[in-house]
Image (cartoon, rainbow, N blue to C red):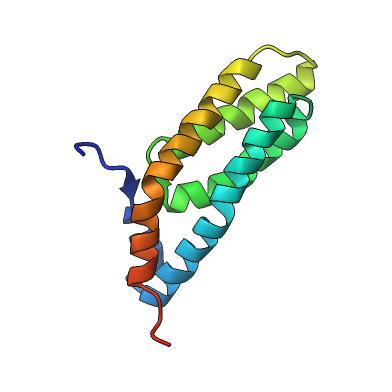
Amino acid sequence: MDEQLVDFSVLEELSGGDPKYKYELLEIFLSTVGAGLQNLQQLTAEGINYDAIYKQAHALKSSAGIVKVKDMYDRLVKVEEMGRAITEARTTAGKEEIAGLIKLMVATYDNARPQLVAEYEKYKPAS
């Protein structure tokens, strides 16, 4: 694979190299992002509550800013902005684009998950 799917540089910088801190941040990322993306997919399929969509995208941005999965942060920003715009304008323009962005994020996350889990396991404290 030519392109890097996951960039751990921000995680490395924030943790100062502390393996326990890396482990904790990766644990949070793995426990929230997958479920959050599934929630976004479900909300988009229902196509009713774009207020919830933009709030869920906003909530996922902080994790996506620390553990950088390819294009996820930028796509979350776009979903958040479009969800907010749909909510405020009470329109349906952009619904298909949001669904497409979420589908791309889910596919990218699914591809990146083995790498994320491997990194997480690397820092797991000995029992």
